[in-house]
Length: 566
Ligand code: UD2
Ligand code: MN
Image (cartoon, rainbow, N blue to C red; front, side, top):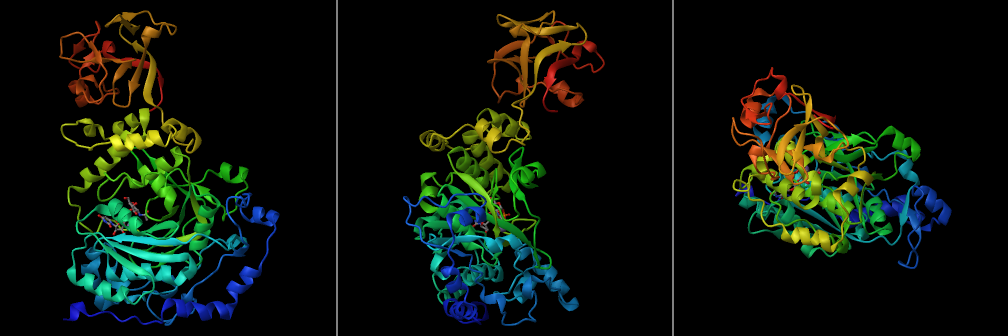
């Protein structure tokens, strides 16, 4: 049975291979002998004090070990060696194309490239001055995967084995999230049994990446958990700088710079400096360059840690006990998506920090599509995850999330976001700060007005303003000093004064006032001339009643005093 043959490992066991390398180059011994004063420590750590000696017994420090057995690759002429682009031979193009969908990247080429290929050391030169402590915590590296391409999975594992100091690598845990190809399970078992400290956890049912990671964490023995996607290549010296930050403060959650392994030619591509993880509405992750002003003010070097409002999600190290203290992930998140927002908000709002460490670099294959199946509808799954995050963490800002295209999620009869009691209780127990605090302190560049418009609501026909008298609506001479003329126009398009909102029952009736309720469509008023929508929502007429839309009528035209967003 050809399909079940165990692939041969073509290199010597890693720990053996590393030892001669270390002795040959003397890296380890000279590093250990180096001594550093407090002052020199501070200057090489971006002004950060050394760890508190009363809290930890601190030993010396050493320069990051540039451990990499692949620096002298077995086969210098191999396809994709040194992270170079690989080329599909003309006569294999059809095959390469047809195999693309197995992983949504060039699976054919991945198989040609050695699982232990060498890649360029892309660390900024100033990383050479960085030092780390001799007694760093150990880590368990957790890869969860479902139907991952074999060659890529192995390359990920080997990159960790080949480029991590063995004494810091407690183990590698592979969590198989119920992959569907049976014969690959046997193959993987056989292959892995020959590798040092690599174990497999098999899930009986598909759990999704969130709960799969938790299954890995549950059996991890290291001090620190390091999560990685299953199609990565860890670069030279990637691990120590991450562990160093966690060692300095266990509430630091740290990410390597995520570089790009091309999905087309498998080349290793370096990314720009000073990139940080951010989000845009409605909770969409993105990258953005640090504001220049900030770089200049802080006199930042390209090797200094970068504070990140949110993490990409896939690659990070976190102190294990801190991960549990934070309540890990929301276990109600399914399959894929949103968990990076959840853990990011939780970390910042509950006293932690997220950093990208430029001296730690890991390549990742960014794929255009998920190569695995979603048990339920993909879009609905991701939306539901995000709604859970918004409901627990966003406070009054959740209107921005729903208002940016997710209004339909408010229809509780159509969408079941599940029970959130436990998550809300956790937030209370940890005494986490507000989302407003997070925006003001961690991500002040984010444009997040809580309402779209506010102030007086001026009517162009009557040249008067809306006013609330007792519980009915009337026109009054505009007066900024009168609180009963002040309204908000919310992200969900409600016109609201405190708890009362304007309602459009039916054409021909007067506008009624009802308790505000984001789920009620008849409370939504659209501004600007989107005719179709206007007709649906009705409009305010001259006696504050609802009429058919007449776009040219000044009595149907309104202005708020302030507009914060379109
Ligand atoms: C990014 C993250 C990813 C995750 C995701 C949002 C990076 C580089 N990647 O998407 O880690 O945070 O955003 O959720 O930051 N997997 C399972 N079971 C599943 C689905 C996925 O084990 O049901 C595995 C998958 O094999 C892979 C990992 O989870 O190893 C992440 O999935 P992805 O690579 O499809 O996510 P990606 O990189 O598009
Ligand atoms: Mn990925």
